[in-house]
Amino acid sequence: MFRTEVLAGLVVALALIPEAISFSILAGVDPRVGLFASFTMAVVISICGGRPAMISAATGAIALVVAPLAKEHGLDYLIAAVILGGAIQVLLAALGVARLMRFIPRSVMVGFVNALAILIFAAQVPYLLGVPWLVYPLVAVALVIMVGLPRLTRAVPAPLVAIVVLTVITVAAAVTVPTVGDQGELPNSLPTLGLPQIPWTMDTLALLAPYAFGVALVGLMESLMTAKLVDDITDTHSNKTRESWGQGVANIVTGFFGGMGGCAMIGQTMINVKASGARTRLSTFLSGVFLLILVVALGDVVATIPMAALVAVMIIVAVSTFDWHSVAPATLKRMPLGETLVMVTTVATTLATHNLAIGVVAGVLTAMVIFARRVAHLVEVTSVLDPDGGTRIYSVHGELFFASSNDLVYQFDYAGDPDKVIIDMSRAHVWDASSVAALDAITTKYAARGKTVEIIELNKPSAAIHGTLAGTLSAGH
Image (cartoon, rainbow, N blue to C red; front, top):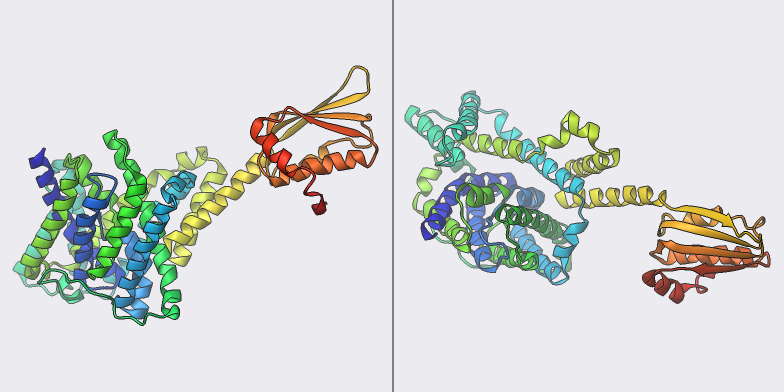
């Protein structure tokens, strides 16, 4: 067990190096910012997190959220947004946000993943434009290695092999291509504790708030989705609320140590849990420790890595992240149109705003509207006339809420019905005030014609809300 956890931590650390550097560049900051973030996130979450063996580090999702802020205002504002985002995550955890994940439809999650993949791929395009021609064959070689090597062996991470091979080629041949060292200074010491140098004003808070909420929401969604995936793989249950506030604490600590923030990493977690067989917090802790040792001790070597290798790594990450099954013709043919519309809305909104959180909110709202429209048509009213001809009995079937109860009023024959009307609600459920108001409107219309209405067989929850609100909502009619 101990040997498995140690080796898993080492493999993950080796695989984290190129991705941490790539995500730093994606965010528009020095590589050390992402490397420090991966170290602090992994170490802190190994202690505070609720899902053992899950890897948290600097991620593309968070990089995409904070990149505009870093570009416009600099690193200190990015760090402040990460700290504020972590605090929001702790607050959301206290409010029980983990339980709200059940309300995010699968189509929104698929759209979230697909949009993330597209944005990661698009971020690589600038590194392929206006560069020496040798960059293109180098990228091709790296892609071949990462696609082909796993078919031969998974003993070592294919991205790491690709990076080593390309680095050896460029150094041995003394070719001039963009390298990691060209992107910024690598760390040569341990991260230090400090505060971001920004004006602490309400204007600053207003500027940071949208990015901080983006960090919080995107980070929690990706982390909780990954935690659920690991739960399924290991047949164990994890504490999602603890994971939520653990992510917040990790981001706060990461910000104070000058990191760019992060969340759970699906790819690295799969390496740790599925490929390496890790099951405890030790592997997560050691992945962070080994990462720091490697980059501080071997910083000069890391600086010689050609950017072509990292671009290739990120292309593979984007391709593997995208849910290709979701856009297969066979899937689209079987999938209800509404589900596809929710996915497309999530992707389109994310690409338009470059904000994954806004995309998810748009997707959830679209799903809610489609669901409400679908359920609204499931309410049915049938009626029979009592044998003596003096009573009309209506039977209501379905769920009554704001979208479905509006048409309820028009399904009764107020003028033609006898003096006594019974509305049987045994096969219906009253959910909100709109439904109670609709029932009030029905009784009012009959009363205006001198007829009496009796509502019977309400289930207990429906009777409670009807008893509380009936007769108090007539001002709306």
